Length: 465
Image 1 (cartoon, rainbow, N blue to C red):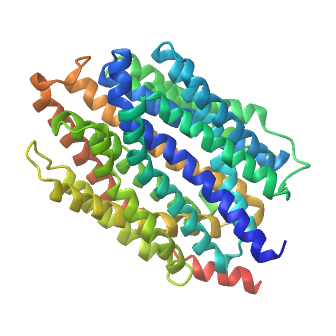
Image 2: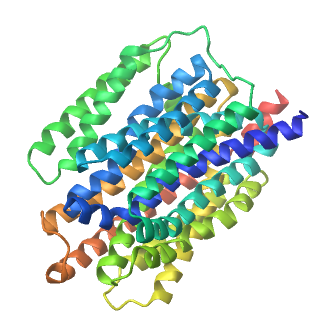
């Protein structure tokens, strides 16, 4: 196999994996009303079906990323694909919502294994001059998963029931497993001789679980105890990582590398502001507009479809133009799209909604690929694993926080009531409030995106050295 064909094969496998995770998320979003009806669950409990996957992924990313650097990224990637396939198929045997959520937790752990290794493998294979284009294609695959998920998810739910979406995801997981075992034999090991930081991994998991569980419990008073405990444990974790000889999470990168730190912060803010869009609009279209899951999926496909088209171009541009300029423009467009959604009404036209989704899609495309390129190009080869897991952590932590905020607003304004014609006005106000907060958050993110500093000049100086 020539070097060019090997690169294409690696990119295909990474893109297939990047497609799988968002596909699982977006298909579940469109199936939430059907799942809620099947189990008789309220909107707050339904939120756990979506957030359990992201929470499990975000707490596993950093330990899994470090384990991949030691044991081998290909091995961890393949094991993750196997876990994803298995626990999607096991959903067929769900007798209650608790079993489904447990399966979603393991799906999230498997997803973490795939996500944290795929980007690191791409960064290892593609040099800086080609990396932006590769990251753009990989990002396009992510958005293709988001865009096709609502469409195919709507068809599957409407014609074969909600469990069919998990069967499909399981089959895709088996395909990803086959492709890496069959076509890629190379192994990437970055720190084979270094021991795994068990204590650091344990502290990371419990501090993040405690904090995020507390967020999900808002507005209950006991949420404060979990949040404060999480903050206290995070201080212990970061102090330990600062002095550890082989930390699971190199916190010094965030202190010594401004480009790395600000790019990660921009990613966290962007996803915290936008991840709940599909969740909120799925409920809005089906409860307020009385659309079928299939029709709602067709509307929601607009945003990620725009992202999939423009992400490769944005990634290629970021190899020639400073990523901060492109990404900051994308963040600004995203804020505009969120503002347009913040004033949704019962009689809002579909053309208006399509315009807002196009604005969001183009903004996401301009932000994501250049931001990924900036993060992976701001560190040396030995830190690709931690950079990849850090990026994925910020992304999924932001997504989890976004859904937690939406769930908390529903909990405060709707309580345990199921959405119905009697409370549709309160439901719509909850959606509007969520988008207002998201808009403000995204505006703040523009600063971190722009203030990250120069990336291309940094790469040039590294190459000259």
